[in-house]
Length: 431
Ligand SMILES: Cc1cc2nc3c(=O)[nH]c(=O)nc-3n(C[C@H](O)[C@H](O)[C@H](O)COP(=O)(O)OP(=O)(O)OC[C@H]3O[C@@H](n4cnc5c(N)ncnc54)[C@H](O)[C@@H]3O)c2cc1C
Image: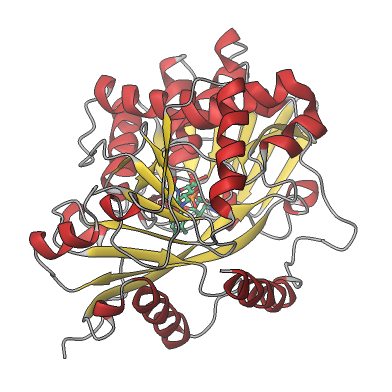
């Protein structure tokens, strides 16, 4: 059996993240962006278009974070129910949050691909949200009605009888087909934005961790092992890789790993038999699986939260194999060629956020859904820094709360993991 490849499948066609040639760090810039992923690089691109001198620093090779290693599904979504959003924020703000999450961010990302000429194998396939429990059909039907009353989302409820036209699995009980969604090669997406930022004059330096930030008399001093840089503004775009020692910010975001495997080549016919709609699939199960045909439609890219902390590789690989076989029993003995993982960034209220804490800007908290939202909020935060009206966003109007028990070290995740395993068992009984 061939050895399992531990790098993201996407890098095979897009290439590995490449270092940028090292230069002497400038003494002073307008904006330092910390983190070279979709958020930081999009922000840098639009800041440079706004005539700012921008330095992007990353502690590893640029683009090596979640942005080049995710599942490659693009399209809106959220983890908070419409009810809860209305209850917490009122109808108007809830509608604006949903509009940005479900529609504006995806439209923005698609337009950016076109305007910046970024070829990232985008396929407008749609996404199918597969119901795990029988009772999901009724409850999600009414959630969809509620959503439609607030925003013009394009989606259809699919009955259990018609579900096999979307995904040929007995594990599900119908679902919702969302139209404005698709698949990309995420590595090509983030490399494309990085290249446009470089062309726009942004300085990007990898292997340069930002260790400390100091603010005095309107000027930031950004400390790195390669020296300090002064800046008028600093943007933290570190999402699931935010260090635990960045004060108030670290207390508001925590990493949850997500894991992916890829099957050996199954051939187009077999993939089409399993995915007749060729859509991106996400489940309603609490610790959900997300899976899709590869861009050439010959393999399956299969992701899930095998654990809420990083376990040994063979544990998450075997968990994902088991989950895959639970959905498609015929694939029980299929060969797996790739297995990798990365950090998503979660907030306590399960929503992304843009804003300023202690004079430092941030845009993060995509809760596993950043291919559209991260560029969108990168664009928004850039415009806020530029004081442009385009910076207006509902995500700057909500709090990014902390909890008394969290100081930047997510010690509670192994306990949450056990809790979620029990909830999974309970929802399996309800099936
Ligand atoms: C396995 C997996 C599957 C996913 N699937 C999907 C999907 O299918 N669809 C979807 O929409 N989203 C998905 N996501 C989420 C999506 O990838 C993220 O929301 C998005 O990439 C976040 O982009 P970002 O630029 O904010 O963060 P990242 O791309 O993670 O970049 C953060 C960067 O900050 C750097 N950094 C951290 N600390 C410092 C420091 N002190 N100094 C300098 N640099 C620092 C890191 O090195 C890193 O490069 C998935 C994520 C994972 C991990």
